[in-house]
Length: 358
Image (tube, rainbow, N blue to C red; front, top):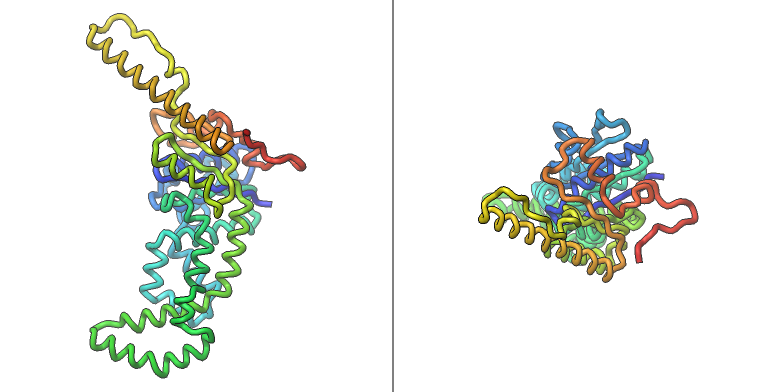
């Protein structure tokens, strides 16, 4: 059975790096691992030492057992349309500019495409573990709500009203009555806008049954996956992290990762070395005091969060430079405190519940 880990949180907190590090840790344990990013910034390839990533998994040759892929939302939606729509409707949707715009630009559709892609990888059972680096849009919450939102879009009351309940009859009626009128109007306006909109809505409605069933399957995989929330102690990421523990639509996260954690011994006063002039010594003392205050603030933020939600807290050390190779990624993850990496990556032993700190 393929295990799934969803790494999520606000943008800019290091989700991509954490995801890559977890995949390296899994492959280092002789697991067949795939890391999938839906981050449009394309940082995952560089972190794994690859020149580029595409929609198909790419082998990381420097570490046997590790593969990586980056979601191509447009290509994924083309596959979804081919899977769920009749052949003639699928061909029209591929060429329709409104479909292209939705597939390429809307975060919710990208999140849903990523969910279908994730599900396909899980169901293939080729990998022992699939790690998903979620998009920054919506703080990652959108990734979980996307299947429901897609069902609501394609099967919603407005679309049903516009297209009618009986599609075959409705399309015939459209061709006989509405289409000529729309063409005439478009001729006056100097384009094909109205006809393309109508064709798009009618064709989109044809995928509802297949998409609805598949969306339920995607939701099942999301519910079974481990959710790892990444944050820093800055106010905005903390607020986003709170949402994952209070939003009922999201499975309760098993770990909350505080990335870029400063060393705890920086909180203690350190003597300023002899030698510099008094002004330089004063600047050094002030800097040490500020860093000490920041360390204590970070510790307080972690304690408050743990006390409020009973979350398992993981601290990933602050690094002067972001890890740029497999060794550094592995070291970063292995040196973090609070993981229980074997339990996270390989799952709990039979009969043992996952450990969550009280």
